[in-house]
Length: 166
Image (tube, rainbow, N blue to C red; front, side, top):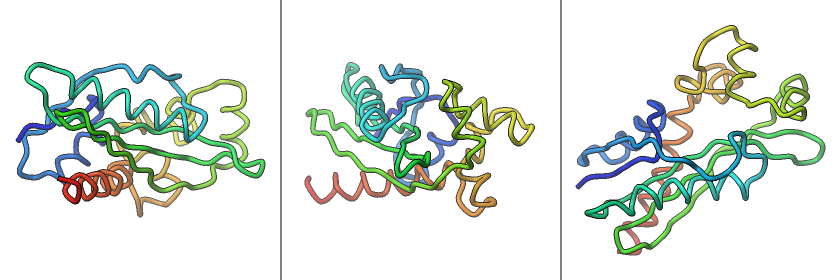
């Protein structure tokens, strides 16, 4: 089985490979067709679906998986959010969301003026490419949950839905 992931991000590819160890997992650089920094559950989910559809709509068709991280507002706080989508070769779509945690106020204020979380996090922890490693979730959970772990949970939900409905 071959699965195409709508990203070259190592954290996302690793998450899919962990859940589908029997598959050949290939990352593809495809656009999400949403903002670089999605600002709602809806926009983040749409980005994941768009990525998965593009991965599935190749010739020959494969299972496509899209994983998208974003932020969302709730009760005057900014939360980290994430979504995944699995699209089958016959165009069935499965979606799932994962962990949500509040972000510190100083992160929220930078997001409010249009900065992208990935760049904010690099500056916040003085590291490069946090989004390709532990992610914001890894920083704010003190390493207990990494970005790959978070997306792995979402991919497990997607796989379970797909297997149940086969």
